[in-house]
Image (tube, rainbow, N blue to C red; front, top):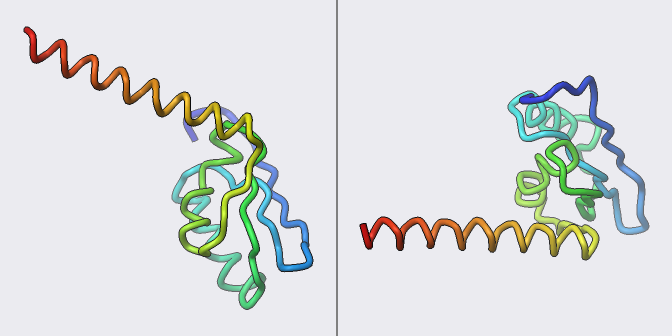
Length: 106
């Protein structure tokens, strides 16, 4: 991890239609290996209904995309989290365009 963190809390509350993964851990090889082990053994055959991310930090959302893609489940989050990520993506895209335009004119 690129920062000090002794642990990450990840929960799996049960729903009527299966389990929800609540926060996912950081995007790291060790985290992916832990999820693969969980999905292959204790969670094998269990229905995962969704992945829910509580906030926009690396520890709750790091493996969200990987899990949603692997399990074919939706990502659930708050509207404010979604909008923050949309603004961040738009800002990064805008900056890339500006740099390309400046390079062109030089």
